[in-house]
Image 1 (cartoon, rainbow, N blue to C red):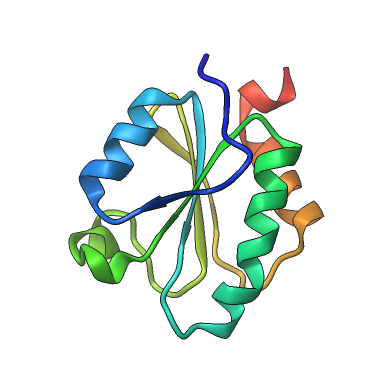
Image 2: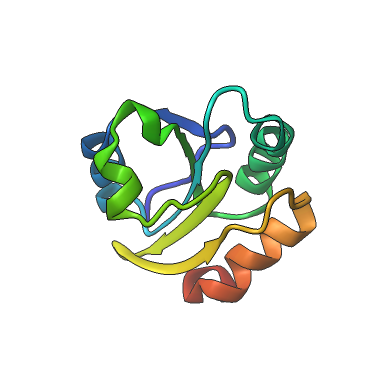
Length: 115
């Protein structure tokens, strides 16, 4: 198992996302857009999640690779998608969430986080 970074990875493309998901057991991705104030307010929470869990945390603006909108069914931002062993195991698209709520989302949906 690769050690997770304490800071979110900044991704630009679906290929970068695929590589990150393939490399790490648990990955949570924050799909955001520039100018979204809720997205901006959740960004520091993602750093906290990176420090509070073993999950690798990434941030990706799907406007840089529009195929991602359909591929990951991003209907609004922010949308958090949780991967475990390369498969989607959770999705959170409920607007602003605090650190505790996001950490709970990760731990409740990831078998690796519950070990």
